[in-house]
Length: 531
Image 1 (cartoon, rainbow, N blue to C red):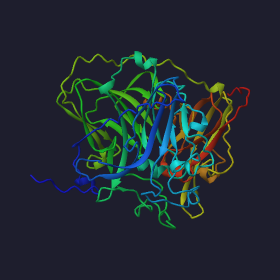
Image 2: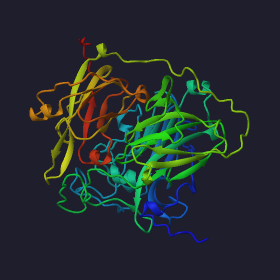
Image 3: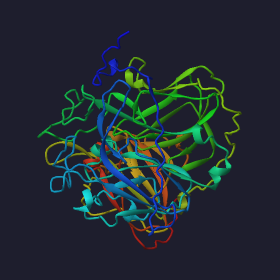
Image 4: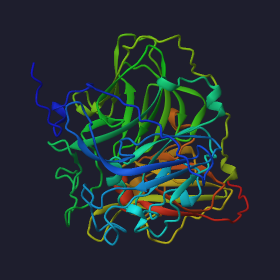
């Protein structure tokens, strides 16, 4: 029977669950006389061709080591590794560049720098957006300091990820394929007897759009049916958000994974530009949540759905032992049943059990390490607001400042701070703070209209504080800050001083100046007791 014509541009024509899921390979160390044995790695950023779907032609992507997602970097807690990311990308970009954004017009077209998202790392290895470099380091950004990134891994076992972080180019470079997993393991994880090896999968969730020839589509102007008019004074111009129409997991469109009737561990990352996913197993079975962005919880939490904004991660166990022979879809319940993007991927419990499943869902995980509000040295009130750029385009702002305005967040080394994100915009933002893992304290609704009409002078609460959701109670580096809410997080600045960043992780917002510097200073504040 002849296959119906598949048009990559038309999601309805794309057969689902016909392409097997792939697990990214783990990168291997390279011998280097200047570094300890098995501690040095090289990863090359280059253009390549990738097959997103069984029935698609090859698609041009940019990948770490020429694959998408990039190879997984695995590290051990407290064991340093050194990674050199070589830029072998072409000199021309294949996606539409807005040359009016900060630092784009007067810089080379293709630049790159890598940020390990969630890493506790010295700032010169953090992937600062102004530490970019071109092929062979011919040109380098003002914050470029080193060719080899040093990762101390002084932090608990966790699911981190690495991705491009170039000033005003992140949305394009990540969309082109520059993303991969960075996994830290430790002695606690070794003892926990979790599913591992063939029974552990990282899952990178993203959405893409394609042209008819299978090439990646990224818009060069805002959509005509946007809910409010968005001027496009020139083309290409940055768009306020990007939501693709094809779900992609580990680089495959609507893939399937054959599993045994036993427990599996999934490290799930929302690596999308702008899309939020509310993930759920179609049969309503639970996820056993064992970790969040920064590592293990104190004990597993049984949840049936998890909402992930861009850059958020969860570490879950799914028990397939009662579903032999069944097919179970992973779905995004933010979409109705007739919408293609409701489906994410399919698990097929069709593999024979190789041997008895001796892995466990532990009753206890990590020791509790809470931060206490009364230890806070500083409380920062940080408005998220709507502004306009010089061309009349809407832009989202942090504390009513542009990226290049003087640094106002200067935490002291070994200080505890509370940050209050006051979201006066109409949408939620995933707020990411470099260097630290924080705890969410609460969210509280306020009178948005009164706040806006008083130019931010009057903040009147209209409800009680709401505790973090069940799947947000662990260590986090990215937090959903909903509209009309004050979202409070607490963090301890330790080990490192220097130049870091905080920003919205909707990549289109980050690139359009919704990003601010942090300077961690070597200074001591007395502890101020707060009521």
